[in-house]
Length: 79
Image: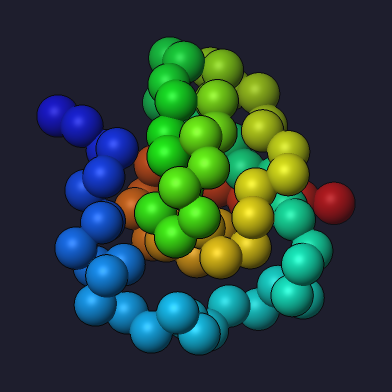
């Protein structure tokens, strides 16, 4: 079971102007909902993001956020 790259085909088929409700350039924090550490490569930017157990990982590019949230393995930080 791997989540890295599972949305790669989906991302290729989506427009690079994927709709998201974040301001352009406004990075956000996400948390991996499972109790382990992983490194995920952003499906749009290719940036590697490290997630450690239940901690939030800051500075996720908004172009990657939409796809990571759709995977169901991540949640957005609440302010």
